[in-house]
Length: 250
Length: 252
Image (cartoon, rainbow over all chains, first blue to last red; front, top):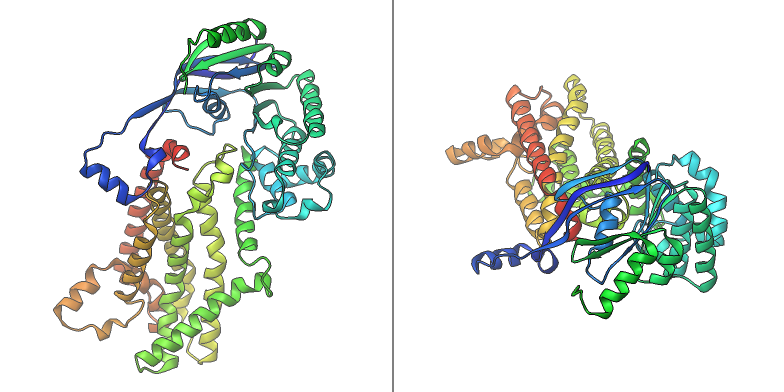
């Protein structure tokens, strides 16, 4: 297996204070009260290797660290400890409303985000008709994105990231957004990319979808890797584990 | 990734475009706003100080042009990392690109103010001095000082969102207590002399005021203090950024 993405003993932790206070006033108050912040481990010593062309699903309960893992793979979160190695170009599609400037038009955002995905403005210009056609935005392409509906947002995001020839695609529940027609259309495009050999890592709570879509599942619980193996096998163990209440994720 | 550098350029351009999008004069406001601000401020202060308008406005402009750039850029850079969350939560992009883009966008104001200053010199028939050829170098030093201060503020703002009024107050105090606002000869006595010696902003201001108003070269000590200020601020900003950047994501 030729590795596309590697994680070596990755740890990500944050202080609970980051969730609560972000002001000098509150920080001083905590200092005076001698409050000791609690450190929360979002990922705890996770190591894995994802091969080229693999389609991998990530499962786990809320707060298990799935989205954090995806963001570490996309090198959006810098781990406190450990190493991430990406051998191919990673294209993340993580959540709605993220990645686009709301004051800018869809077209302007395509050029701007295109550069983050490895495309020059000339390359984006060449692909813009295809992006616009798939997204079905029509004249809204030149409207500020703050006026877009969630469906329009998702269509443009999905259209852009799948049009820029991703080598590794990271998806976080994004396909559950939009109308049924768009969901079918985007899933069809995703199938095409996987058939072409694009490596994909998908986070979803829809276990049946992941079993159908992925050859391998990674099960996380409280930031730790519980199981990693063939999709059907891990899904069965996960269901059995949930049924027995073995996992106490948040 | 090479195209990520293109992002920096495009984002800077978009910041300039977005500032006055929808306004009746559009991009022209980028030039008009700083020019009108300086003319009004010069007029008000010359009346308050009961000084010769033409003489005082040239003095004031020589200090205010770089100061306004510093002040505006510091304020814009302060929340730049936090505002960048729309991009940085979705894609891999270095956080320092965002304060840098804001600095770049504010350069348009700086240049517009600078050309307003040159226009005023023509208007008031003030002599142009050969020493003004040094001004591009003075601008560069001001940019370095601003980059350092802005980087520090942008990092600190991620963790302490209530520092904005403190920053504004600090900038106002720095303006009104330095030779940007008053002529050094008006400050007499030992205390005044000590203040002019220890206040670094007076040295920064001299990089513009000496060539434009006094027609002399900035003194070696002006360059030394200004460059040292830039060095200290840039080093502090870089250390803060490198040590804390892995925490930014959790504070958005």
